[in-house]
Length: 302
Image 1 (spheres, rainbow, N blue to C red):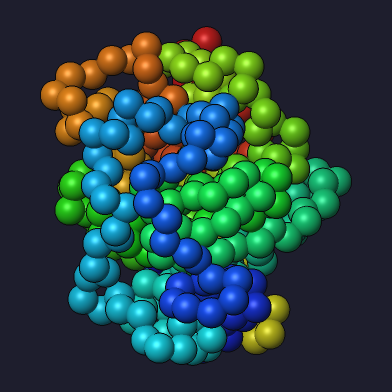
Image 2 (image 1 turned 135 degrees about the vertical axis):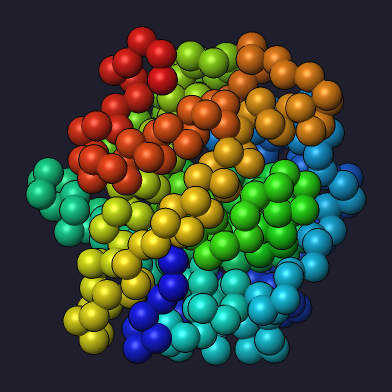
């Protein structure tokens, strides 16, 4: 999904912690601390057995061609054309689009949307949920209402799990984490704690609902307007864009990750849902455009 070249990006909506200096990410050894593991387990469903199989030293991989970071970071991201050229600007532009879409959409349901924070980091950073490394992947921390992204993850998604590297594949990941923020606002995020593992678990239903919310945003993304210009942030979705998003959804299915990590699939340990489930619920949000159709808790089998 390409950005409207004339869209004006707002760098203030993303904090860039890459590089040195106060308040930026710090490198830590030994993987993720016990506190963050516990919180991620109950709130985001990351299975440490899976993580051990797919993560390396914690060093993020190089970002692919056309997606490099220049010295000025996201402060250099000013237009939609920048978002089409650079991954960090694309993350920022997607955040801008999400923050334009959700307030108006939820207002129809008499729900206020407190704007979340977003952070781009590399290697490790401090969060309201503890210290997190790149090994965790993108995540949302409800304690500080912030979504965290290490750009290296997106190349990992392509190299290790065969996802498309297309723009909407990347934008889907950002929209999924913002879906967790919407769940937090609506009071549903904590339901992952009640039933943290298994194919029908609360954790899986929470993740699939966030996928549905990502699809819902994708349906309306080309009409969510830049408040500065009155023009949409994004161009209309193409068939290739949709294929890219579905490719990313499939790549992060529990069955596919487990197969890549251990050579076998163990549904009893699922925390996010299968590839087919993740594609199904993203498509549900995209095709219906209706948040009431994203109730993964209302169906016997999500």
